[in-house]
Length: 384
Image (cartoon, rainbow, N blue to C red; front, top):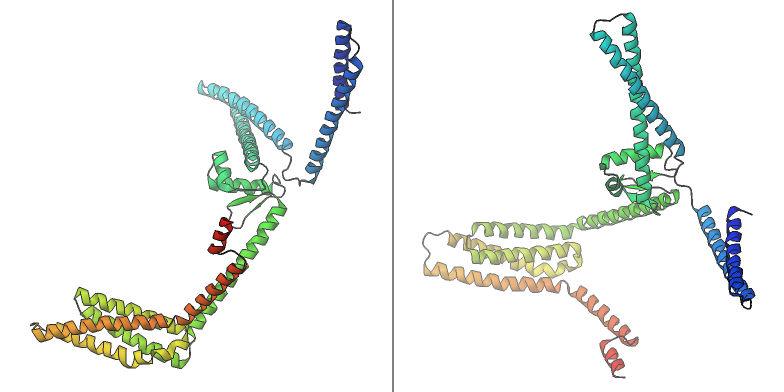
């Protein structure tokens, strides 16, 4: 029987004694036996619950891994070193001061010099012990703060640990590594980026598995991106020939835009550049639309370049007569027409994609209707 059992029996005995005393004092013994039974039953139920709770806590405690090393020896060692170092440094320092006074008044001899050397060495050794002991106690104090900050968690950011101790992030990282190597954190680890302390082998294993999975995913994404870029770069000679010619037309259009100063026509040319560039980007990614560019390549773009060249020549003339102004206005209007044509061409190049999306949406609406999840179905449900 342990001490707790004796304490419980003592508590129960006091409860029974109080009941008996009350019965004797009041001369009422009718309810004494029943009251003793009730108190005993209540006590036994409470004690049973406490024991079950203790058993659960003990089982949980036994299942938990031991994460932290015992620090009682370190505390004792640090305390002893601090005390011994302080006494040694203080005593030797005082003796050294006395010998210095003797030396100052002229009583210098080999004995005084030898004693001064001895006490100087002793004072230095004591100071070393004192500093080492204080460092150990200081590190032990920080270790307790680290544990308190961790709480029930098996990981914690170094930023939080630095904030808890009031030390710099660099200092805390070095401090933690020293404790791990010294066995203070029995299962201590740091993450690859050294941003976090991990105090459990199981948590570290999970971290490594997650890191490997993320790294594998990143590599797969990079590989897919490289393959996609490679497929964009790898086109047939016929397609590449069309794209090269298209880039030549774009270059000539840009040069004309740079040479023509007018803001209104420059805006029209810039829009044309953007539309034509998007057309060729679509053609690069979807070579199947190349046949749709025949009229554009054979007629529209050559005509555009020719008109812009003529506009440049007229715009450079020092005298802007009616014929020149009328011709320039006609070219500007034609650019609007060409931009509309190019926009329609670009839109038609997305026709298959639009059909696919429309088909998907149609199927989705059909499925929702079958499941009774459309807006009309909800309205009918509310009416009911």
